Length: 218
Image (cartoon, rainbow, N blue to C red; front, side, top):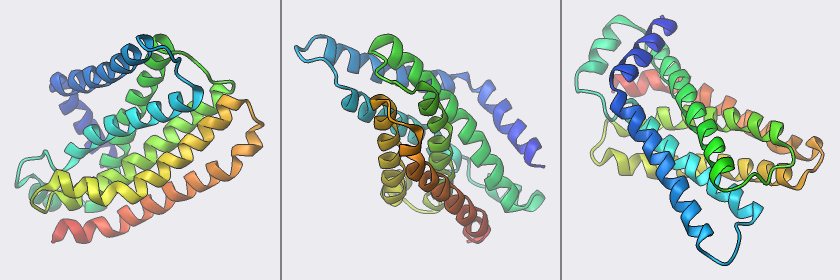
């Protein structure tokens, strides 16, 4: 059933090509603005600033991607889904779908940053491995919070406020790992951050899986 729902999400997304095109244009616009800002200035972009700008770009792209998980759906659709499938199946399928889409956009962001700005990374493979870990954390937390926010008024504002503590933790860990990749440190130097990132992902996923059925019924 998870695969069926996942296929449904992908099929709907492919039919609504304007959504994917809009996200791609949003990502390209941010990178192009960063490129113009630093290419016209006297100071070159430093590796640390490159890292911060990249992850902030990924964060806002992910928020725009995942926010529509429940907030953008028509009223009554959740009631229909609840009558035919388990809520756990719904949340898992949406997390997986958002993870795939967020990872794709993040990897596209890497390509754009490398092409238009520069590549300061000494350990490129570890950096690439960090992207899906962070994307999964964003997907698991924001998908769950999108479900909560969809039940309230001013849902977009509520989602931004609720997601702040978790997202900041994931963002700081990712920036630290990226800094180590830029500095060319041994991979063992990033071990603690990677373990913490995986632990947060596991915790958020478990909480989403356990609590979503109660939120959906409310």
